[in-house]
Length: 318
Image (tube, rainbow, N blue to C red; front, side):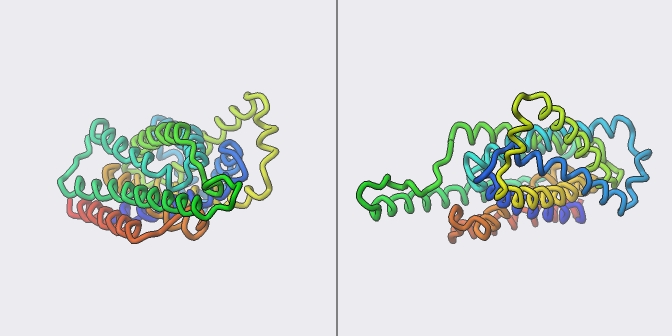
C-alpha cells in the first residue's frame, strides 16, 4: 500500500512539474530546460541519499543493478525528457498528456513479459479508468478551444486574423515527440524495478540515474556545435520556472523510484498516470489562459481517482 501511495504522490508532483515546464517553454527551448532540470537532480539526490543514509549502502547494489539504474536514468532523464519537453512546447501540457498515456501500457506489458508480474481483473478495470479519463479531458478541452476560437472569430475587429490570440499546436511534431517520450518512459520502469527490486534503495537509485543522465547530457551538449551557446542564451523569464520544474521533477522521480522498490510495475505505472490529471488542475492554476476546467474534466479526474484506488486496493489484497 505504501508503494501505491508513493506512486500517487509522484504523479501529483509530476503533473505540477509539467505545468511549470509549460510556463517556462513559452520563453525557452527543450534543451535549455534540460540544462537546468537534469543537473539539478544530482546535488538534490546526493543530499537526499546522504540524509537517508543510503549513500553508504552502495555496496548493497550489484554491478548489474547499478547498470540497470544508470541505463534508466539515461533513457528517462536524457532521452525521454527531451522529447517530453518538445511535446509540451508543441502541444501544450494538457495536449501532450493523452499520447504519453501509452507509457503505462508499455510499462505494464514489459513488466508482465520480462518480470513475470501478473494482471488481475481488478487491475485491468483500474488501468482502464486511468487510461480513459485523460482522453475524456482531452476531448472536453478540444471542444472548448474550438468554441473559444469560434467566438473570437465572431468578435474580432476588422483586419484582425481570426483566432490569432489562441495557441496553435504543432500537431505532427508534437505527437511524434510525445510518442517517442511515451515509449521511452514506458521502458524505464522495468529497468528501475530490475535494479531496485527488494532493496528499498530508491533514493540511492535516483542518484545513480541522475548522475548517468547528467554525464550523457553534458557530453552531448559539449559535442553538438552551438549547443552550449544556445543554453547560455536561456531567457531569464524561463529560468525560475525551469528551476521549479527541476525541483518538482526530482521529488516526483525520487518517490517514483521508492515506489518501484516497494511495489510491482503493474501497480506503480498505472497509478503514476494520475500525473495527467494533476497537470490539468495545475495548468488551470498556473496557465489559466491556456487550460480549461469543465464538468467533463472534473468527471475525468474522478474516474482517474477511482482507477488509482482500485489499483492500490488490488495490490493490497494480494
